[in-house]
Image 1: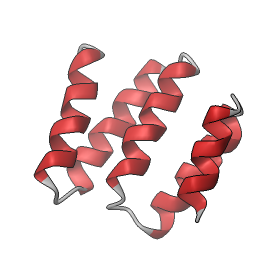
Image 2 (image 1 turned 90 degrees about the vertical axis):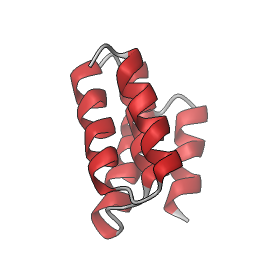
Image 3 (image 1 turned 60 degrees about the vertical axis):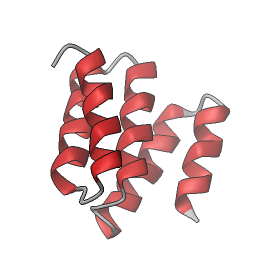
Image 4 (image 1 turned 30 degrees about the vertical axis):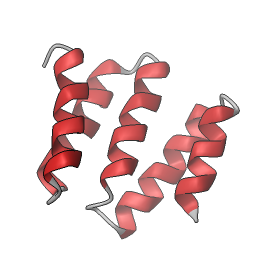
Length: 81
């Protein structure tokens, strides 16, 4: 599964490759909230804060799961939305 591969790239510090995988996941399944959350965290690690905010916003907009939306909103709040 691409999500597992993306997370392995994150662990290895290969953030660009991880983001490629998160983007591929979301292209096929736009409601995959974990990809938004971990993609946003990865962008934060890369210092790309505004892009991370946008990832979290997109995740909130696409998720039907209240818990996932809450986690994404929390991450966005930490960045000072």
